[in-house]
Length: 380
Ligand code: GLA
Figure 1 (cartoon, rainbow, N blue to C red):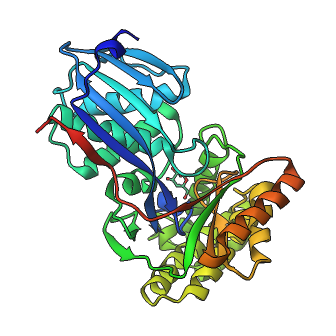
Figure 2: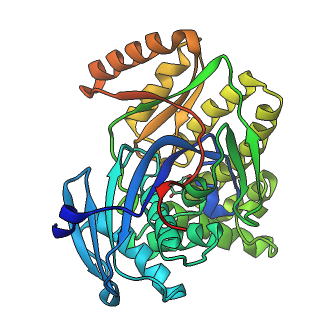
């Protein structure tokens, strides 16, 4: 791409991936979530190029790029381009201040690993363009337009958690987000002497073509049936276990189990917030194992590789709790491991996993980190 020869960025932005401590698939059911950003991120180097509507985007990570005419944005056949195009499309719906720009993207965030590289890509670009062109959009607008971009251009009917975590996270904290009201609190997370270790199964998921949208539909089917008996119900957030039991005979076994998981998972988020505040680490660990069981058996968004790693952790007394994090069907398991046992844990888990599946897993520690931010600039 020509622009690379005379590229001199005016602005560098980093946008992080996230983990979710607990509260999986509760976001699009209007419930609670407890995510936080991690240090792994995507960097965007940006410059205006003086044209009205000609843009260049190049990915250093994949050594590939594409050109965009802002007046002719449409869905691409190349998946990663749609995250960019979707954001540009959504911004141009609410602002006419965008102009031509050049952008280099570089990532150390593994894709398809449940750490939300999608939201990092969307939010980093939205945040960067907001700064570069002085669009005046609020952080919440950036979050919401990025989520919509994923619906319209990528095709995943995701909730708001990932984009919210990517933009709004604060170092040393998790965000307790109410996905209905969008009210949130930062809860300090102190796990000492334990560390958060991620094990990447290397089983990659693709939410758009996976069962993600089907799960959302199954929850909606549940709500439609429950509402016949309880007209005040708008989402599974409004349903408790006893209401669900009353409706059980009208629900298919599958939809019943999906709803049961969401209701219990939502309650677990509240219990987890309490455990964090009281630094009750055994309860925290127990909730993670309990959540994974639901993820695997009731919501059925796990896979044999994630189940294997969580079961492996359960046998190790130096691990307080573990579960698959993120949208599901692979990606990473999150493990709360005693600091003195981290190396031994990683070695033994890697060996067993390799023996079982022939896959070399990737293991790394994560620390709750800050959200999307400017690294350097000559703008504003
Ligand atoms: C994906 C989606 C989120 C959320 C999680 C599951 O990461 O993007 O909105 O639904 O799955 O908790």
